[in-house]
Length: 292
Image: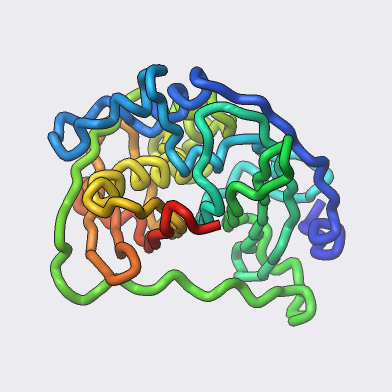
């Protein structure tokens, strides 16, 4: 069964709903490595892993009311064993409370034939279940490496993708934050939402083309969120408003990740390195605490 553009684009996903609290926030923070770093700049991470005065990391919005690894459903005609996370873009409309109930609406917004693979972009809107107020908008680009060529050259069956994330500045970074990872971090992060077996099962990882299980791209995004916190503490009245990340190479649990940061007037440019390889790059933008 091959990718069917019209069927996938028109698929109606059921709205997801989730009540969450302190344990969920702490589990997420641990899954993205909070509490591992000895760097003094990250020393205030207790607030993400201790229930007293607990704060939720904004990037946790990515796992709340998440539909799971929906691409594994045979109705979609996707070669799910070869799917990898290509990009994630997040807009934080409101600060995420440490407890509450949320609902999430999801749609497939773009499908592009990039043979030999296909790019599938989903857009999720996370809202407060009681008030209906939007909390975050999450766009995720998945690279379906076994599903290219489905369009047969028909341009009407291949969408124009969102504009590329800007390139990095051509100057040295202003600062570097080094984040350790634990060997079991991918296994721990799986408990939040994404149960793709390539993150824990060596055989599944080899089938996907990796020497061993890799860390989730969304977990790396959560680590980047942590790396931004020291910058925000120096900017009272501001919070994280946007975070975009393009994944370029796999990240392996057990090895540290260096997050390089370039200060910009409206936020930061950033890149992630592991063992000398650039594994991701992106941008972050600030919003005021009062901004709606």
